[in-house]
Amino acid sequence: MEKINILIVDDRPENIVALEALLQRSDINLVTTTNPNEALRLCWEIDIAIALVDVQMPEMDGFELVEILKSNPRTKDILIIFVTAISKETKYAVKGLNTGAVDYLYKPLDPFVTSAKVDSFIQFVRGQRELKQKNKELEAYQKELIKAKEQAEQGKRIKENFLANMSHEIRTPINGIIGITHLLEKSQLTTEQKEMVSLLEISSNSLLGVINDILDLSKIEAGKFKINRASTDIIGLCNAVVNLLSIRAREKRLELITDFAADLPGHIMADSLRLNQILMNLIGNAIKFTSEGSVTLKVETLSIKGNNVRLRFSVIDTGIGIAPENIEKIFESFEQADDQTNSRFGGTGLGLSIVRNLTKLKGGFLEVSSQEGKGSTFCFTNWYEVVREAETHKAAKKETLRTFNNLRVLVAEDNPINKFLIVKILKEWKVDTDVVENGKEALEKLKGNNYDIVLMDTFMPVMNGLDAIKLIREGHVPGKENIPVITFSAAVMETDKQTAIEAGANDVISKPFELDVLHEKLVQYTGAH
Image 1 (cartoon, helix red, strand yellow):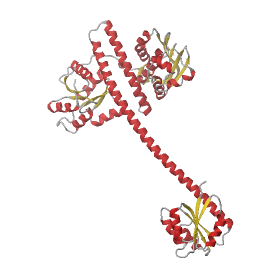
Image 2 (cartoon, one colour):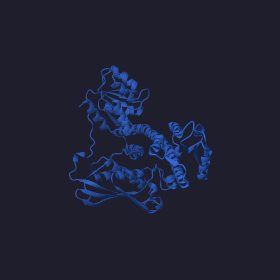
Image 3 (cartoon, helix red, strand yellow):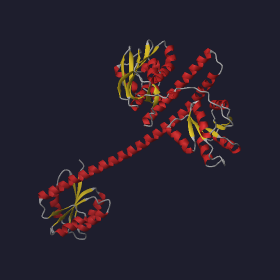
Image 4 (cartoon, helix red, strand yellow):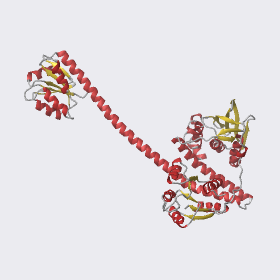
């Protein structure tokens, strides 16, 4: 235990000796002086915790000494106990306490009172010092926390920037592949070529699905994921998922079975995109880990309460199964049941993690039962509102998009495939189109030409789309400040879309884009018919 330094100041040596005899103990270190000036020096040089000060001394009395100590930041925290033989009148006690003393000892000293008082102040000092040390540790801990928070925020920013850049860099070429696939589908193809184009489309959508999985997981973790419910044809949605995955099942000679309960409602209020994603992941996983036998999608009604129905979607396979100790592991991000599974079947290991997160967000319940070598069953259960009279006009119908008359569009796009796609689509719609490769060229084109709307890619060399939009809105091209501008962006983070709007864009279309979405936006912002 660290010793406490106690200073005794008295002009009479015999008084110092008496106090030393009373206070002698192993946990304190006594420092003594008969000179007040020497006492000041000692307080400066030594860590004095408690000072026993005689009141009446020549040259400088105890009150004056204490006033000097209390006026200095370095010595103001020393606990002062006055030792006096003068009157015990209240006015003297008040004067001493006002000077900064914490207590009085009156001569002749009572050994028990003196020892008890000094002992209590020693305990107080130890408590204060321990508290001060804890405060220092707390301050250091707070600094570490602030530093860790800053590092975490920086890491989050880096992650978001990485995801945005990765999204753009990968989704842009995928957009080109999917777009060219659509164009090929419209051309004269043999049966074999049509099948190859169909496989190309499925492969492109699968690759896009992996990117969306990563982005979705990031959004879920950031708490920025939204559930959008609308009238959904439940059997139609399930059949669409099964049809999309049937090629993969046929390749593995697996039977892909649907089993729908007779009392299923026709339409329910659901986020069809996310429900589709859950079923795609579960059935896709089942096909992936099943070498022979079948994969079954079973949908059944568990209970009905008023206008609400509780449905259970079960995906049952005859695949490799999962060991009991690995069941929780498969729901972790980037994890699979074991290393052998990863080497044999591949994959990111994100699917089931996203399914569980989506299930929680939708208020549902996900459970799994499995037997190694015999197969697994994944069940997703949730309550849905039944739509009694579904709107028939919401059935998907592919209509030929009508052409425009006298519409002039400026396209700023540096990617050659996307440029080719957009120009070809616009020409099919009879749109007069000019194309540039960066924001600077777009500004130059705008100066010498009149356009109804600008389609601007977000990321381009020389000058990116956002900088170009800001300059347009600031009047860099006189008379064109209010021209409608739609940006194309392969980045799908909400912050990226918000940044584009804040820069002055009227709207944002995410890549890969749907033709009807682009057509609708052109009509909306130009008034063209």
